[in-house]
Length: 262
Ligand SMILES: [Fe+2]
Ligand SMILES: [Fe+2]
Image (cartoon, rainbow, N blue to C red):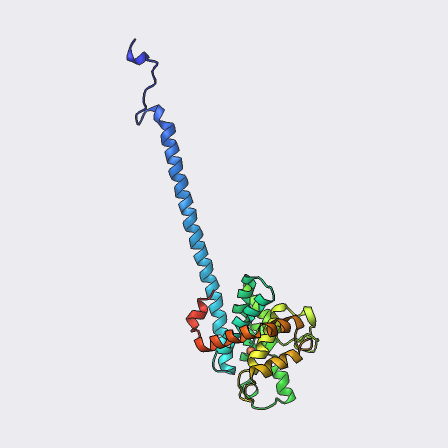
């Protein structure tokens, strides 16, 4: 029998028709691996780009809030404390970690509208005259106008806080006289931490209250100025929250450290 007619299967050599299925499988596998690697790289690059955008939003907000803060307090630390205290309090109220973290970034903007208030009113020692009070009470709406109409969720939350942080639980706040749960929770939380933090800070028109006095004043306002659930959470965890404030005062995180906390 000639070798050409041999029924024995022969080993395929490259270039022969019998080798093609194997080569095709190798090429397909290699292509699949390249695709998976490309997707992995694109996914990483996309995440890095998204994080960069989030960092840019956060930085823009911090720079704006520092501008307002330098006009009012000259230290810039109040807004940092408000962010961290609002986040901690939100967690204590059972809010999700991601929304509490967003509150930390947005809450420092609560008084950005003070950029639009004349220094003669903002820094006046002693009580404000009625027309000066009217001017001062415009800062929530000015803040919301600065931040509002944005498609960026962080700016939307910041605008909502700026607008609502002087509303009162009993409906006697400003600018809209909203009451109870009609006030966004973020605004109710920031109102409480801002109250305590502002009281325990010395201002040009009065010395600082001590922590105990400030907590008593907070308790007195439960159900009046402030949401009782938020007040109860603050008082129940006051030791932890005031220790956090003291740590922030001692650490004084730099601007770069704050921006990096995205
Ligand atoms: Fe304010
Ligand atoms: Fe404040």
